[in-house]
Length: 355
Ligand SMILES: NC(=O)c1ccc[n+]([C@@H]2O[C@H](COP(=O)([O-])OP(=O)(O)OC[C@H]3O[C@@H](n4cnc5c(N)ncnc54)[C@H](OP(=O)(O)O)[C@@H]3O)[C@@H](O)[C@H]2O)c1
Image (cartoon, rainbow, N blue to C red):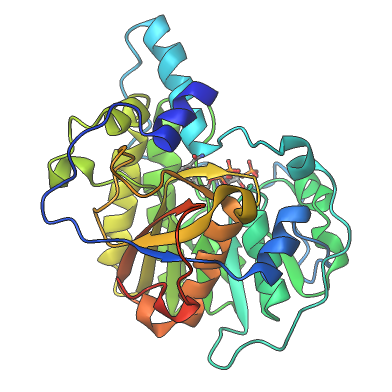
């Protein structure tokens, strides 16, 4: 798994950049929120909206990916499963810290910024990136509806100690759009941090494509104004002459995860909702100080190549960008591709979406 994750992080085989590539912008990420998020998972809150007991979700919706063809060879399955799992959940350098129970959430650093949504729904809130998003939203003074599949996991992260976090059931595969709309409730924005992590090749279609589409439908029904979707570099690789990019081929091998993420992106873009799509490189759980400063680049400009300015990025930084996308009008209707590098110069936050 680590080796596969490294394909995105280290670039693997080097290829020429795509034609028409735009230059990236580099930024030093603000540290106050990131420091909180990197040291402890999202901290606590009282469940204003009680999460139903586990296993009481609705029957699984029909999925057009349920009949996905079986993987032909066991060896391929094994290797590719590792690749897909690596993309979805890279083994974090700080795995122990990531899984440790959180203390109470830090008190909001300041009142919510002017124009910020009062309450944000986070899908995949117990994920390694999702929990950081929850924490950074709270630190920014924004209320959170944390969409989770596993109550105990949420509790282990300390969500129940913060009255600004409402725990709500969210399974984008098993719940209907109406049920998900109810989960979104009175939140006026959604940040989607979901991603399939299992070994069933059909799972990527179910979660990263159909599940995302289901959530987008739910967001429309809930009257949400903006959806910020976390996907990945290389989702549109074939569309910009990178079909033979070894990183794309390797990461997409098992279950077509990148293709499914692209379909999810397209569905959001065509939804009529306000949207921002954030495509990171390889995710690291190390702090931004270790991984490097943020580099923001335009749509279809970074491919995990040796010629790229960076290939990995701290999840803390990714969470910052996801939250910032809700606060910066320049993020509306944009796809940003993000990596990090210790040698990248600082870029002011107001230019993060100026790509
Ligand atoms: N790893 C990388 O290097 C890399 C690189 C680029 C992009 N990405 C993408 O970035 C995203 C976040 O990555 P991560 O490392 O934070 O992943 P993660 O820790 O595995 O989190 C994924 C989240 O998705 C949730 N989820 C899975 N299936 C779901 C479903 N059916 N309904 C609702 N939620 C569901 C999981 O719930 P549970 O907590 O209950 O398991 C988890 O909270 C993923 O989409 C991943 O593919 C990863």
